Image (cartoon, rainbow, N blue to C red; front, side, top):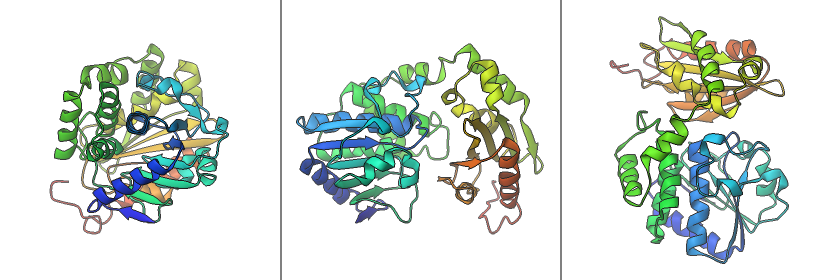
Length: 344
């Protein structure tokens, strides 16, 4: 297997391009509960492959049986996404985008297992990735950054449709360029994408300025529940299945509510919990300081980045709080061990 932490990105681009060139049928899949980076990156990659290799049969898969989240339906190709459970082929190549853990493929994992070859394009830390070629660069702000650079490496023209998908990927994974991962590279790639035809105002309108009234009612409930402890440095809130049903909001709409919790003045770590059908709870973690919250997510069966991670556990919101809050408190127990800076 070939893997990357960044230094050999060019050679891995060539390795992935070789796998694409050798394949006739290609399936591209992102992680379960896909966000803007997952969807924007995989849809852009499909368009790029079809542009460079027009005879390939490329299918973008959804890891879950749920439809594409409403706020991302404006992206080119979103209406052609196929549920992995409905995909019956044995593709020559399976490309995982925005994930490196097979378990996060959900129903897409079955397709991956029966594929002839596998490639990964990701920016999440992973010690033991699967696949024949794995380009994993945690220093990239988003998978969309890597996909954009893949297009540049191969000299594939970036159309306005591709640019829009990739700009959405980068904008959402950097929190509209407000998170700690919004580095110079992210801005440089975003600038290139705008020059290629991406519309930041259209992305903002669809993703951040088209909330249904039902969602806003749910948001008010979550805001009313925000609680802090550890002298205000940890903030959390939650939404139950009953809340979602009562307000008429949808599960996918609530994914951004962690940023409401994150906005509390003086907080350094934010936790948002959401009950989902099947007796499970999804947790979103965000950090505003130098503290690494990814270890908390991993301890709870999830993963992610230092400043943005997530997990899913069996049980109720109370069970999730009992599991997560002690781990979050430990982040503040030993500043030296956590690499705390004076600024944090």
